[in-house]
Amino acid sequence: MSALPVPFNNSYALSSPVRHCSLLAITLGLQTGWAVHERNGTIKFDCKPFRSSEYEGEGMKFVRFRYWLDEISKKYGSFDAVVFADIQHHSSMQSAIVYGGFLGHLTGWCDWRQIPYIGASMADVHKLVTGGDGIDQQSLIDALRRKGFINVSRDTAGALAVLDWALHYKARGNA
Image 1 (tube, helix red, strand yellow):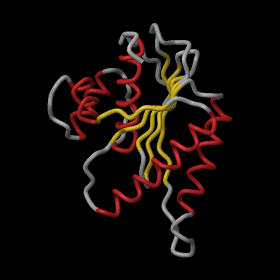
Image 2 (spheres, one colour; image 1 turned 90 degrees about the vertical axis):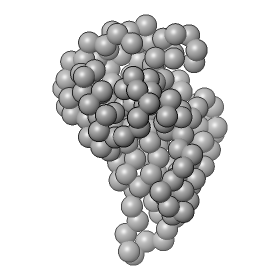
Image 3 (cartoon, helix red, strand yellow; image 1 turned 45 degrees about the vertical axis):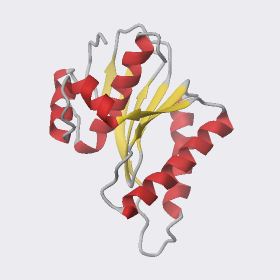
Image 4 (cartoon, rainbow, N blue to C red; image 1 turned 120 degrees about the vertical axis):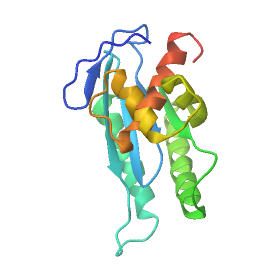
């Protein structure tokens, strides 16, 4: 992907053959990273926490997540597709349960709005973005910074990498 980033508060403009599509890339979890590729080629990204407080039921994180999906869709317009980090191995049973809950809500939200979605294998994403087989977080952050994403953090790196993967395959006509 040919990228000429112009930083402005986690906002970058790309000149690429996929300028006119709108994509949401997302890593699912209690600290959800997200990146949006707007139709004008601008990329915006951040992270959103969804932890429940001690005074709430466990389902509130999912209620807030669904509300947030509606809000981000209103803010950036309708999405042509949603790409999420497809995580197969989790560090604990609890993280697997949380991931599954967010994934269920995300896919249901997309189905309701007739937005296509696809999971991106993080091993494939890391390989494309870093050029290597390692999947450590720091190499991913370093590779994204070399691509011009200056404000990359541990919470946003996954979503930006998934977006980069999606744009790469979209530009090649595979998505």
